[in-house]
Image: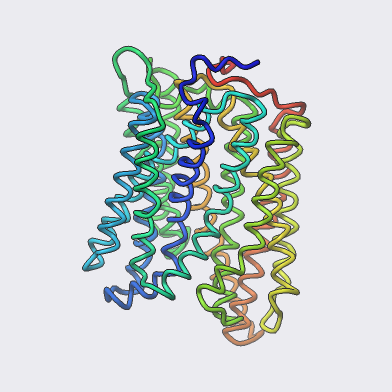
Length: 483
């Protein structure tokens, strides 16, 4: 029997999971829900095409660069306090963004959403880690959470399409109030704030160095998507970001209270899980980016119909996420589900490369989406559980932050990489006189899907080699990390 005497959340664990699921859904939604609303927002507020990317970039920059800091804050000041601060702050930022009278206010509000999201995401995942201490229940909980994390971006497309079409683009931001306010009230009632005894200490030097470093990497990737990989700004940001990240690792090995203790990432299983999440996001963002364009501009789908077109993938994610952690992980370990998930995702992407200007959804899109969803479901839930397993309770927040950070950085790299590859494919296709603009666009989507398939295939090999085989032993949170 598992001892629950020191876990004040045990009796309320399933209600807490519902609250954490809402919090995670809100953070993931906001990476895509605004995308479909952008054209309407642009017409309403009158900003230029060049400025449009900042509505997305402001969120990703703040979110991606501050996640590790948010995770450590949760460990130092208590997960309940940081979760509540994230929920309240996120809802206020969403209200400001929804009522924004001009472009500048909207960008500031999106950056604030990213900042509070960086508090919210690791606090939610680490609360889940410390709430479910029973091994079997933990698998089910992570399956549900992984399904939400994997499917949230697609749900964002559906919700964004519905709200934009039937209400207003502003409701793509206001909807967070509907989610955040009840979640904050429930979290206040259900959760007990747990924090280490003694004086709170933060690694301020490490925090500044890695925050600026991640900012450089994410911003460099966003610039690469528009200006190319060889532009001065892109190169300075990426090289500077990588140098600062290397300096951060040196700092963390020498300070007494590191922001990211190396024991968290040096474990092969956890390190492999973080790498798997990052690589999966590099590959999967091609689907949301290019398939959305294909459905709307080639098949002439409405925003809401486009969103619903992703539902089969969501279904695949939810089925396999629950199966992977509740059934597969305790019996066969993490290596096979992650390897198989990457392989399925590669097959799904390869199937999507067959789209053309005259092909249909059922014949050429649906099969690839279903297989991709099954693969991503295996991946996300398994990586989330393994990436937060085996750490002591006071490291749960930073372990959770690492899982979120690798996703965010991977998504930024993937968006930039695939965008530039697709742009080059269009240029060469037209230069060779192989077809018109529409045919060139579809060709570029196919090229991007082939690259994504290659990324998933290479990731299967890398993660299969790195992650150890054998059963995954679930430990109670608080067990030694092994380093």
